[in-house]
Image (cartoon, rainbow, N blue to C red; front, top):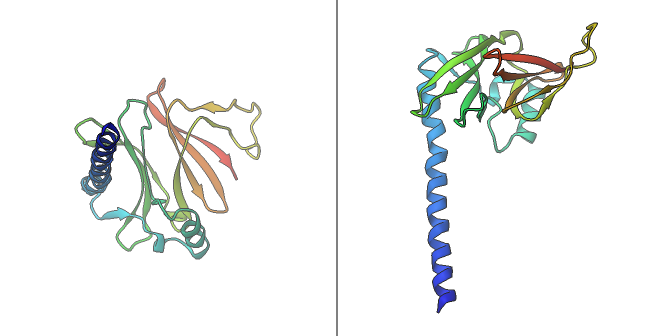
Length: 181
């Protein structure tokens, strides 16, 4: 008798979890729609807007996610933020933007980078823990690896370079470290 009741309670709990997951999955798409209002004429870059090699790589390795959107807590405040690759209409104009969001789902832009010259080969992914500058950059004093206090955003220029953007809490700004050539 108790076993049947326990199974019934587990089924109810799983049903509620699935319902919560579905509603949470719909929310980011709605937020992206409101975020795009901050960038009139822009849209989230699609797979078809990449060059052939990048498109092939992304379709093999990013089947379950969008390589133009990263949603994570970039500034360590416990609230999910956004990093997006945006393209202006059918023009070649493109940009990488980072937005910090508040508890009421409003977001504000904290970083923007023009990636127009590389838009057909650029994509995003979240990174954590550490980022080290590439040895190929000729610097007299090689900087120590950066310990990321929250999630960073790796911007990959397919076959060219990788740069990690992260929130520097002390300087209160997004900073970058090139990790590969």
